[in-house]
Image 1 (cartoon, rainbow, N blue to C red):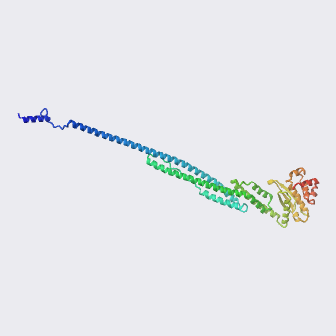
Image 2: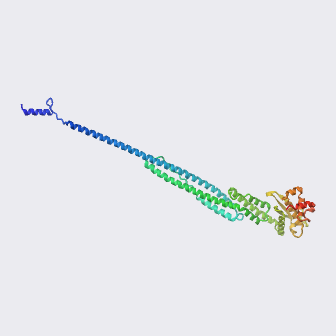
Image 3: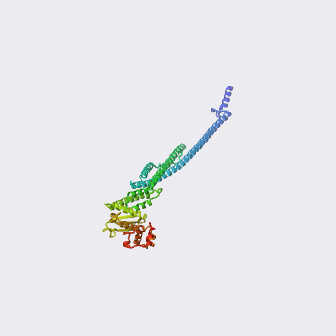
Length: 414
């Protein structure tokens, strides 16, 4: 037996001989080495898990921060949207007030234009008409330039992106500033329009306030006008609106006034034509005398060759007719013979005084209706005699002589 071989055999067997003499090679680690390897694997797995956890937490925190930023941005957007809605309401209100002011101004300007169209030169005060023209033109310029500035805000839904929300918030705030500026501009225009309109109204009021003086000038320039036309003009003047009451009625009143002034001129022309001829100046003298003793009772005159059956052969005729229009006036008709003999004999003057007596009965109606029992001829005769015309033509020859008491009583009526 070889010892070396035996030793080798054991050695080999110890190295891994099998029961059947087979051998296998095995890479075995020591026990300590295996424990170290497991520990490393556990550390590796734990590190990866920790890293994953950190990443998850970081991602979670990042998501929360993003949500917070979006919420803050959307809150700014909502605040800006609230501001722009308020600014839009303010702008719309200012625009509506400007539109109302413009409408009111156009109505007043229409009144002014109507009044100016009716206010013919020569019938209205020139300075006041010029002032109204100027004020109306200036107001027209202001109203024409006035334009409401309606700016509607852009309506946007709430954005889901923080950057977009912040950008839209900034845009809406800029829009709010535009709307506020528009509201201020419209408010300034309202003030300008109203001031221009007030100036126009004041000028119109001054025009109507100047019409009474203008009417007096028209009447002075037309002394022969009939009482219907004269009193008609004065009646229009009495009904003119107050200077601070300028509306459609004011413009209509100007037109009515000018029409009445035309009627005065036409009446004057007709009366002048009636008085024309060689007796014109004498007729004017007779009319002037009659008015001087009529106690302010308005008188009209008609002239004819024959009046009440008299006027020829040295006779004189006259009549008096009362008209209740415009408070009442009397039309006295006289024969041409009175004018022809005026200043040369007293009869024609006495007839004239008798007819004025009929007219003045309206002024002393209580005395006439009671003491004289409403007898017109008794009254007129007594009045003429009481005036100092106790002569042919006083009415005594036709109607009899009144008592001395009645004649004396009549002298209280002047």
